[in-house]
Length: 275
Image 1: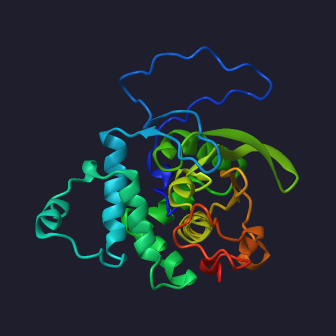
Image 2 (image 1 turned 90 degrees about the vertical axis):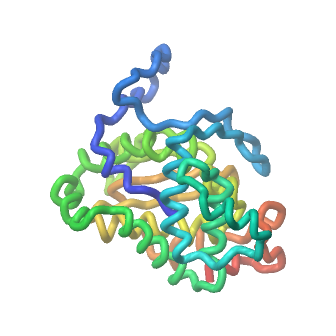
């Protein structure tokens, strides 16, 4: 997602992943120190319905910081009453909610081509990093199997606020099986949380999938491919796999969600935002 905060900046120990075929361990109480950033959620809702999330102040702060950066590229909101505009202007970062974050993403799309939308997200991501961060990342995380698996493990706890529940899975990269995949069960952005709340195929692809793939592959030097499933709103992230050109990617042929997206064009065979 739209863009997503690089979780590699959170240099913390990755949470242990349950090996395939074993029953998950008995849940333990979360430690007060070094706890991962998580937001409570119910089980993913059925297709067409939104999952209920209970974001805390820290999760809202992440949304607010990211949304404020994106506001620079967003079109202006519709004229509001003076008292409401005053309230909005004084909004603290922890007062933002996910719907407001998605609204900013929509307004970034307005009046921009696909390439311009993706460039806007790239600029936002770069603006949130300290100078020289991409170069340092390349030194710390060269594209090895260890780096791919480490980043996959970090994605689960540190991207939860953005995409919702996920888990590390085994994938095959260049003929080698490794645990460098992440399955986002119902993306909060679309297939993730982002997709689920926006309901927009174009927003999922232009504001999340392509910019995130490009950022990791080209800025950080760590290949990443994201495969959203528009049937069940899940999404698979594969660290170490070079993404294909959009023209060769199945998502380039994806039609709109006519019943979910307010910007949809039901008569079009492909989402207009992908063209």
